[in-house]
Length: 141
Image 1 (cartoon, one colour):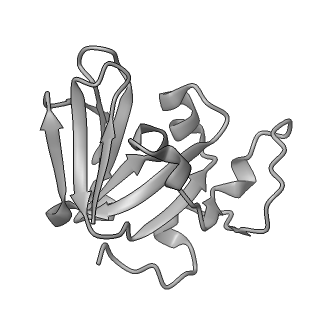
Image 2 (spheres, one colour; image 1 turned 30 degrees about the vertical axis):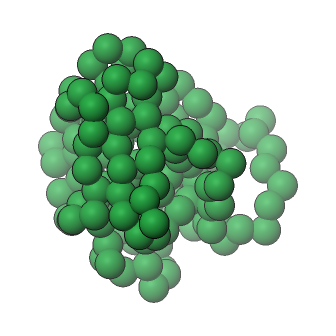
């Protein structure tokens, strides 16, 4: 199975083979500010199965060991890599070619959720980052 995604102008795109390793909502301030959104939906994909297609994204090191990828033409956020998530690419669910197929399974950084945002779901809510969430998500497999 091939999953595809692209930016607003469709110049920068990506694909990956197989299933995502995980899917979640993140409520941290960095993710919200990077997207200008109250919450960000993510898919985790092993780098070995991920490919940038179309124009190569521009990359910004937002903090030491954290790289955010975005379209150099329209500015759409496309992906996130971090030294502490070695071997993985975080892909914005909103950049999916078919975002209606996205199915989140948990929340991270829930303690940072904006008080005015109301989400009515029964998903597990972790108050920590993904790397410290007490789950069996493991490495990008």
